[in-house]
Length: 420
Ligand code: SUG
Image (tube, rainbow, N blue to C red; front, side, top):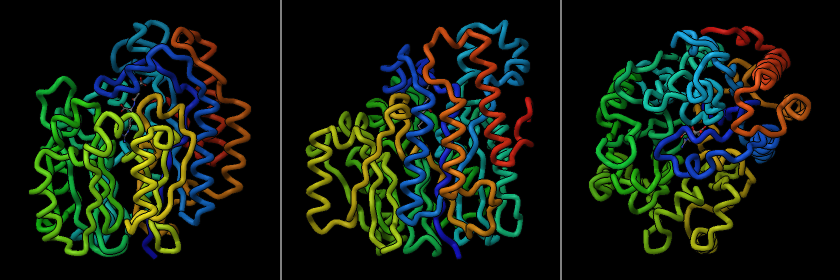
């Protein structure tokens, strides 16, 4: 049976605040702060466990091998000799934000009746541009069943592709054909536009989507300039509901009209700027919530603690739930460590609509498996990393060993190799 599975990226042992993401205000603001990788990973695992307990199928992706020595070698250097900046780029734990791993088009949307996944090239940011090789390797193992899945290599640069964070799917129910919305940005503002229209168009072709059910929408320049470096910071969709900030899109009326034509049952829940400013929406990550359908059929938002701490946001949410809106439940999680780098609940997961039995079970979470991962994280993940620690060989060794132990624990030691 086709159902939505959320695959969360496990936070890697090298999680740190090196301020690498221009245009991501949280990353810039927290540059130089001491990180807590162990707490970060445990926070992410607690969210996975809670979603599993809510009756939602849960998958996982492994953190990538860091430092990425193979990438430094391609640049003619080594972890010992690299400049501090290059070394920080090679040590980033940014693959935790699985919403940027790939774009996913479920089987009912594709001409060949398979679920298509195209790995994102993440070409705009150096620290993320080297994620794709290992992401491709993981997806090829997780979704090896070629009757159900087709896993594609990234679109070639310079066309920047940041994956599902700039893609929304609207449908009557997960298993019915959907309308896929690709959101791109146009360069010119103070911050880079990380999703290029050419890349989105390529992904739609590769996934063999029907043009009549595919929409390309431009992100508003105002949203990018306010710090919405991905569309999933200002909008999220689930089944027939689009939950969006008023200022998310360049031409919202044209987009809403197209969507209403293509999916008459759509419900657009728009939060006006007068109720929640773009600044509050972005610092609280209201829209970076997971909008999910519970087994009861009701929808819920899985939110970060920052949403409850932002008065305008929490007031809006409480009023919505008290009224007749489609979102019936609010679940709040402490994801402070990821949030401080601009990664909320929705960033940490990649949604795949598929039959869970068709997925390699090594990537499926169970309570027992989460217990084992938690035990290992509590033993082996560094408690804290200051930016100066990134030049300490003992930290590099600790990160490599911790990750190798996780690969072994999950029966995925084939991923514990230096180059992909
Ligand atoms: O790409 N942060 C990530 C956050 C990604 C959030 N993902 C979604 N919105 N789906 C980014 O900017 C932190 C940079 C650092 O390590 O310094 C970082 O890469």
